[in-house]
Length: 173
Image (tube, rainbow, N blue to C red):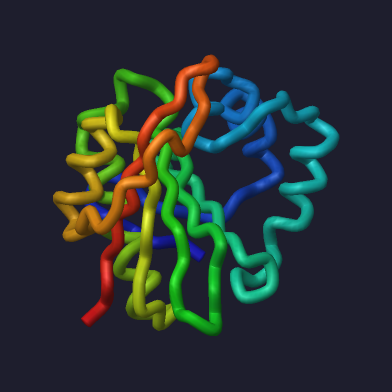
């Protein structure tokens, strides 16, 4: 499956993505975003890649690689907690290198995923959780129509300090 945009495309995970995923999953600066507590071994990630072909309805997750047209992996975008009964899923996005952020890649990836979710998966709504101080993500998701619907106080502990987290939703009308 390929979802094509103007500057980037989204593609399924490949076995060749092992090193890329390994560096992201073991970069402690990203652990706050993914609620990760421990590093991942290449063995575990290799098993994950071997099972990544499972249908979103079965796996309850869809992870796609954000690539430019030079076939460089820039980041990943996920649907998680896929809930078929209630027709909703969470969205997470990460652009790995800071030099590739604020370039419109995340915005284009989110647009592609939103369209795919509503048109092909027939979801009714998408949601995301963003820490109160993550201004870039708040700006990205609100630019795509996500609305702030709630504040979860002292929701995440980061380095022993509790942080508030916003809940954003996008409903397909």
